[in-house]
Image 1 (cartoon, rainbow, N blue to C red):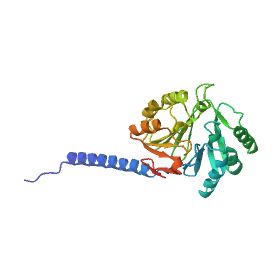
Image 2: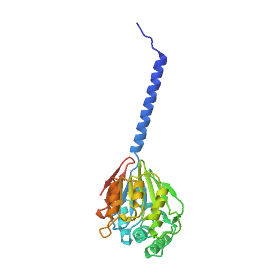
Image 3: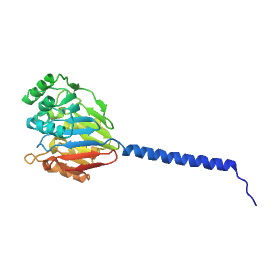
Image 4: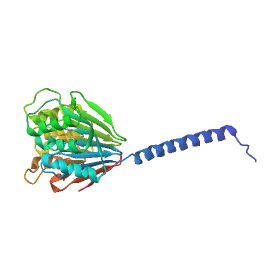
Length: 281
């Protein structure tokens, strides 16, 4: 017996095969795009109980805080060693000396395109030196009263301002920066204390791959709730041997299964490919 070819069945088989192949190719394409994201590289400096982070994505650089006065030169030297001649965004989370102290040096020695600050002023020497350096550089800071979003080559940044005009603690004026890079999410919480942490939990959504722990690892009344909400895989604490992180903060993070790194033990390098991150200290 000879079977004749059924052109309708063959046509259906070809259509199904083509559909399966197209889905497979689409999946490969999406995976390829994820694997070819320009890396997001972050450096956390060992500069005592102070904050400064440099984020690089392609040809674009963001600096969050500048440590104390004497830390400015270290930041500038690092940028020079990395061949970074320009900062796209300099974000000063608030005006404590351990966050704004090195800003005048950075502004005097590096080309800075944009500066973001919270909506308040200070009368400290470090703040006034920052203001003078801004004037000499011909820059006007963007004072944030509303959420600001911007993008680099393959990362998205959201900067959240404080929600009220007055706080008991100057730390609660902290700008908080959320960064998304592929599937990875990073949260830089400045020195946020209880009032600001409550706001941040309302401003942000979802869990984070990495958290820059607020206020150098000091415990606030709602720190544990905040950590549970953010639920980070990794946490970086900017502490010093003189001003160490509090044990209750470390314990709360460890209970969540978070891997903790301390800047007092050395510079920390983080690299994200959009799917996973690598942390080296």
